[in-house]
Image (cartoon, rainbow, N blue to C red; front, side):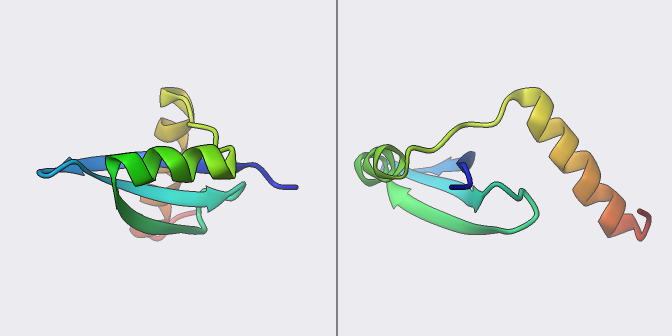
Length: 71
């Protein structure tokens, strides 16, 4: 099975967590928002991994290349 990933992208007042959820491919993800307790349960139930800062930087660089029109 492909490893699910969660990347926290923000926190909102009231205890809400904004995050991207993907299965193995950082380019294919859904943006989600859940209350903190539901986010914690979601992560446990899906046995997610959290990408390292280096991995996030690499993903961001790849996304930026696509935005700029280069490969």
